[in-house]
Length: 422
Image (cartoon, rainbow, N blue to C red; front, top):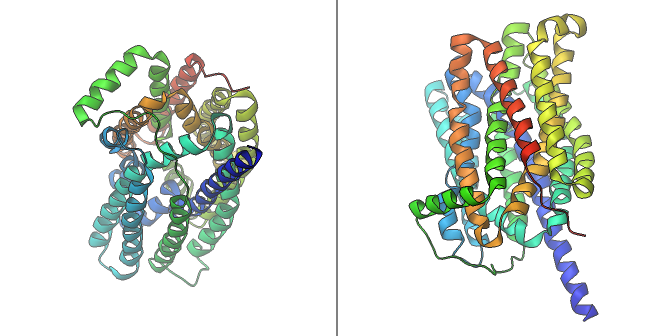
């Protein structure tokens, strides 16, 4: 019996470690394809339209979320989820390689912009199909009390790679770089492709146990009906959705921070790499703190800190004019992106585990799928950020995001967390 338990524990450690390796490598991918800094900067070389630039972030996020409710009706009837993850990994690799080739070989800016948005959306849709399988597998192989630590290890160790990637991005985008646009972005996209391939191969090697609780396959309308019933019966699910949507609305302003700094405060484009490195370094320290706090005190407390940091960031941005005279514009925005890193680390460590912990096993795919599809729709709606900036200016967008973070703070105080296992 002792040998069997030892082998089982070793298998759990192996799967845990493979999941961590996947997260570490994807942290490098996410740095090189960061929508708020790298992708929006790439698009800004191709267009001056605030509307199109405002679409970069929502399109880079919404595709991951949108298909998941529809996919959940199929997932919940199948014993294993990894086969769909492996299939989507192939599609994602094709999209990333084509993105690098587009940046390198396509010279017409109109075609370059069209292909950029098309490949970005295709990659994210494939990611969405694989994303539900990822969460389902994590729920099976990582015990509830260790999920915060699991995401903390993924994100904290990944930040080390991200810091190096951020320095590299800074050097590639600086005026002194020998590699100029668009070749510098093509190189970044190519390296991201390699890292993504290894990351997805690692997670595809996880040994997934079969689902113990299966539900009959259902179409989209049936899943919507089940989701409505779950919302009526589970107040925690309602509070979580309110929190999740408010966090999205609050983050609507983040992609515009660098644009605001460049256009209104004349911060140089090369500072993007500095902001990115500061953001990742702050996240690295914060992940360790938030992961330990999650394991000891639960995820709700971590999210309370995260929403509070979101309020603080927007208050600083709204006071940017007097503060920039005091500290200097570039120094101030380094501070802002440090706080953004701390904020995002709190959300990254706690939000996924909170959803997994509250979801009944038989309805886990439904809870995750409905939440993420609703999130995807909401993320697409945040594309109005560009319209708000064009119509009312940057401060109006910042105020809306501040109010959204205030609403998220209220929602997390109403949420009732499941007790940690003894």
